Each structure stands twice: as C-alpha cells, then as structure tokens.
Image (cartoon, rainbow, N blue to C red):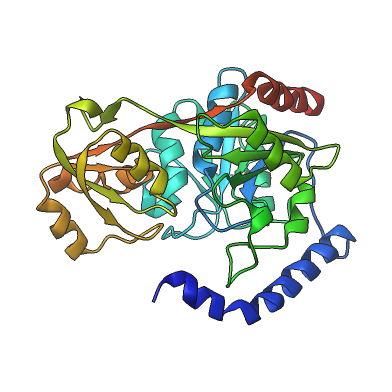
Length: 340
C-alpha cells in the first residue's frame, strides 16, 4: 500500500502533536520559556514542514550575497553527525564531524566563512562571538532553526515549496508539518520555493491569497536553476553530452531534479535513498558497479571520500533564483545595517 494510505491511518495522532507544539509555542510567546535575542544580525532560515524545502541553497544564496562585505558564520545542528557539542569546521572536518549540509558549506566557502554546528544554538552563537576578533562573525546564519525557539533571530526566513505549501498541509505524523500553521506568523520573509519558471502573476496572487501574509511579512517566489555542467573532483562534463548514467539521490525531495533530467530526454536509472541516508558497504559495492553516477552536491560531499568512486561520481550544481531579487536582497542588507 502507498505511504500516503498509512499516513492517513495516523491522522488521529495529529491532534496530539498539534497540541504539544502549539502549547510549546504559546509558552515561548508568553515568555514562560526563555528566548535569547542578540544585538547583532542573526538570520534564521527554516520551514514549518520536514525536509525538502530548499534551506541549503537558500543559505548559500545568502552567503554569496554577503560574504564579500561581512564576516559570516553558519550555525547548524549538524543532523546525523558523529560528534557531540560545539564543532568549528577546520581542515580535518568531514560530513561525519559536521553533518551533510554544514560540510557542504565548508567545502564551498571555507576561505570565506566560518562553519559551526551545535545542537544548542544559543551556546553555539556565544562561542562564535567569543572567537578572536579576526574570526568573530558579524552575521550568523542559522540553518533549519525555525523551531529552535531558544534563539530569537532578528530576521526569520520561512520556506515552503510550491508543490506542497504549508497552508494545505497537516501535522505530523499524518502530514509534514512540524508545528501548527500559526507558527508562520514568526516569519518576516516567506519564500515559495521550487516554483515553475513560468509561474504566472495570476498564480502568484493565488498563492499570496492562500498564505494571507501579515503586513510585516513579504512573500517571494524562487525557482531552482540547474547548471549545464556536471562537476567532479578534477573534471566537468556538459550534461548534454551524457548518453546513459545512474542518478543517485539521498535527499528529501528528488522529484524536481528527476523532472529536470527527464525534460532533457536523458536516459538514466534512479537509485533513490532516503534523506541523510547512511551508505552501507553494500550500497558502495552497488555504486561501484555503475559506470557513471550523477548525484546531488549534498550526496557528493558525503561520498567524495570513497576512493573507488573517483572518476565516476559527478554532481549537478544548483542555485536559487528569486523573483524580485533586488527587493529581497535589500530587505536582507537593510536588516543587517540596522543591527550593526
């Protein structure tokens, strides 16, 4: 039976999850549970639902926007890492020590930013700010911390996918929502991600109507832009030159990538693993049998340490394109100027 059928059976448990998370939020809103705010720019990127909304490319968008003008640090929980407590990325860092996404940030921007992980974000922020002056960040980007109410970020960016907006979803375990829809009121910016590139103004207005944003909230639309070139350790391949390959994904929602490749009439098989999949020895042996493997950047940074995959493992870079990016960028930079 399909997964959706089983999730419907779990619907009676959704009100329990709703009640617990709703009460938790109310306690924070009332000040019964403590939220810590900071006198420098802290920007949170998160969502109401579990996985797959595009937090990693959004963090990278912000890094690209700000890295030449400010000292930046990213702070993540470090999901499924094999270390504990606060970790600051260095030359010994790996996906095992940091987690998938933080190690991707470090791999791409290690000469430009600081990358840290800590399950306790308040503790992590305090350590980052205590670093020697030349290393102390002016701005901290919190990755996937919308539900981490112990930190009161100065700017909250909430992401929701066009194909599965939080307004039409329900609570775990029957749906994908981590907290009630009312939690969206904490957002200052709402970004509808993974939109079709030809999204009409009429459909945008329909989405904005469904969200019904508060006066202090601004809604933006973004889409994924795929590179024309696959990248590996020392070589690039034009995607149009591919004849046959294996697509391997270990992300929450690989469908946009699959759709993109199918539109190019490429021939491939798809090995679809769950998000943050721990690749076993048997998995690696199966991958070793493939001639050419195309994967996501997140999966690539985890698998690049496997010597037997060198020469056959490539990833397809992506970027975020934001509709009315000038307005979006100005909101970010204006916030930063007011806090520095």
